[in-house]
Length: 137
Image 1: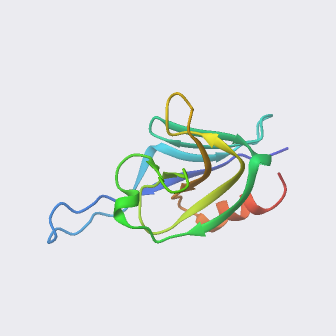
Image 2: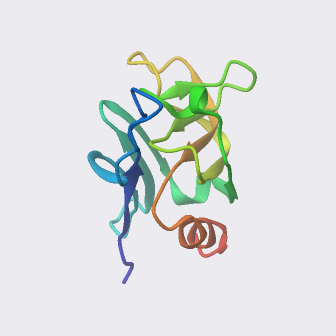
Image 3: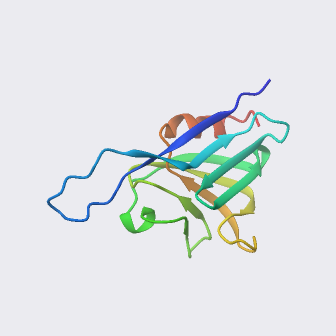
């Protein structure tokens, strides 16, 4: 029997004025990462209206990365022009870069752009990276 591991996203709000302290991190309810225990055995990422789903055997590896520049994490899902990677980030501290054997769709509704990697900012980066890199999928 497989377990489903879910990781909520940690979000930080940007300061509007330099003298106002930033609030504590908040959880976005529309941003999750799941490792499926269902019959599909899939890795799934959701960030608002954006979705990435791939079989676990398409995950080549995962690595904890960061910190990131605010320009790379503020706002909606991001497409990297240099390598077509997609980022679902809610903070600039740390995240997990998930590498795929076969690129997957995610950023565009027509699913024409394929991404070789997905970076997500989750609460427990080490655990997600370990689960994805464990070789059990």
